[in-house]
Length: 141
Image (cartoon, rainbow, N blue to C red; front, side):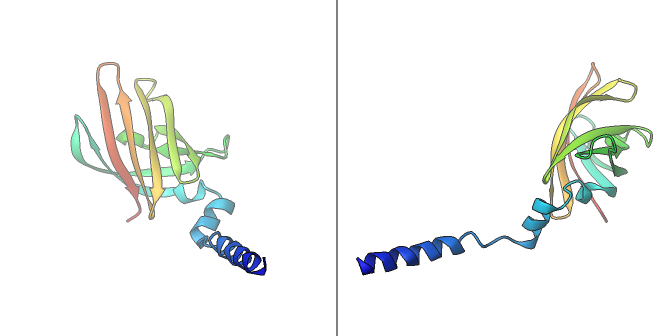
């Protein structure tokens, strides 16, 4: 009986130590502001299924003060500094809900993930005449 209780105690301690492996980055995500890491001026590098690759331009990401979990991406899809797209942030994930930009002439939607200091994303645009898929990344040079 003593042997079984010692074995059980040893297994219990081993099991407890398997949960003590959080990194500082994990703690930041749990207790920090997930939107913060997306904010700032970024370079955007993207490729379109029709327009091809080589697109490289600047975007500015700011917080949407009307929704604390949402960001505004200025110059999204290289549509000009006066155009913004909304994206919802959950942890390291970015969701671009279906929305209209450019005076309601382009419908967009997509998603992305923050990892290693950059955001990898994909989205679609629909002008009514053309449906195009894009993939790319936001990075800080």
